[in-house]
Image 1 (cartoon, rainbow, N blue to C red):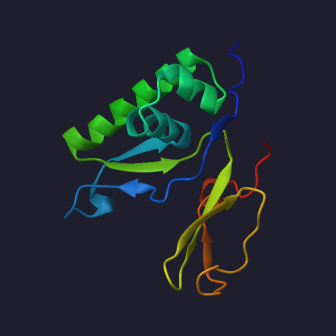
Image 2 (cartoon, rainbow, N blue to C red; image 1 turned 60 degrees about the horizontal axis):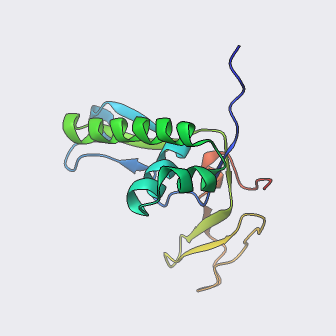
Amino acid sequence: MARPQKNRKIKEPPVFSRFKPAGVKGKALDRIVLLIDEYEAIRLADNLGMSHEEAADEMEISRPTFTRLVEQARKKVSDMFIKGKMIVIEGGKVHFSKNLFKCRSCGNLFGVNISENMKQCPSCGSEELMNLAGGFGHGKCCL
């Protein structure tokens, strides 16, 4: 019997969760699901340039598990580019360290500790806030 999957530590939710070729309606495209932990693996290894060992420590997983995640993520991203598919980031067993909020009124994007519950935009005072971690089924996580 397989071991249960550990929750992966993710710094913060992505600002954008859908990517597709320009000029084609999303309904007409095949969809690839990139799990949020795969997204984090790409962010740490390819965007920040961390070694697999450093990135695994950051996510609180083993180095071999991290390597599998980043390889799966790269395969999906290359499939999107080569075959013109849409990538949707979703799901996974994760805990966020930070949360991002976007104000629907002024467009301000700001980060807060995951335990903070924002009610107003610090820039314009609007209460029209979009909780980006909430879109992944997490608004508060235990750390």
